[in-house]
Image (tube, rainbow over the protein chains, first blue to last red):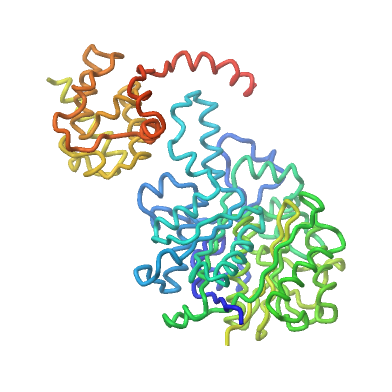
Length: 417
Length: 145
């Protein structure tokens, strides 16, 4: 029998709250974390196509980190360190009782230290002083910087790597952690997804790609509206999610609180287009089907889907098409929600944050609402999508995360009994 | 003497500001690595601040002689009192006692690891900042235009 893997700790930094309790309360209450984009120095904000963002407000690095880290680390790494520490505390994981080489760190990072990168590049061209580039710049922009920082902070000496698959990065990180524990490479894996890319260049870049919402610049809270007829692109968000995954016997031995089981995972590539999913949803359906097979679970058993649903016209349609294709009649019975409706698209943190929302749904027999679902788009309408919280005992849930570069991932989370 | 005291105070204030500590907690006897717990990156950041404060450029090789706060003060006083531009003699910059660890930059460490002899024999190549600025300007101006 394959080794079972469970979730024993959660941590989150998000536009609707830091800490899982705060995050979940706000998600269920339908709180929007979307606000007007902050001014970017002297740049003409009116020239930005999208001026709404899911920003983590009131985040004071000094309240969580030492003075040097608070001043020098990139914002994404700060988010990731804070979420990781929360998850470790939540799991009551004591590193002095663990075999250090059996505690891994797997991070999903898509954009990395963009804030720092843009700042240093700008400064270099403005000041023309190559010898004044921050000495910490290179170790910060290497995509595995957060993984290293977490390992150093907690003495986790097991495998330490970073998965970079854009918006599906941290869903893959959870999947790879599952496989690492199944293979007995690790007892415990600290999984983190983090992104903080609300920067002048990234907001402009996603804007020119026509990926972002433009219609609701004056009503930020209405901008992220997955599955709604009025949706017109995603809202750039930021944040971090962290989960402690561990082998079930290991969790039992140390009498850890068990949130849920990570039962299955699939990773595929559509090998189709860098930014657009294949229209028929066949590939997304195939990914979800493979994850369910990995979990030895039939599609008819699925109770809830935490959808990738970024609020883009094409993406939301295709995902629902994929769900219909896979679940058939069951598609009309599953509950579906889009976490991005309240926090925007947190890019590489999205997989972890979606998994956290799903874990909390399993724990609380409650699915958070999909905000701004006011006028259902017939192209992606299913009865299980609602603008209100929905109560349901959830035994099996799918978490979807799809990313630029034509890549898809699905996770299966189960109630642990 | 006044000038020297001024240098010492300015240096201690710069170090204190960089480390976010009270200036009274920084003494000339404090070692940078041991007592003040500077790692190699912190050390470079500190050198940036010192270079800005005193408007001079500190070659990497000179930095290696800094063990204590007092070493930096001595060095700055030499540089600012007519020896400006001239490198401080190594023997003078380095402490007499051989025990304390040499204060190294990451780059210096790497250089030693890869080519110790070449690094030791290498003549000092103080970066000519003005020339670099001149060279870079036209290109940058084009980019910004």
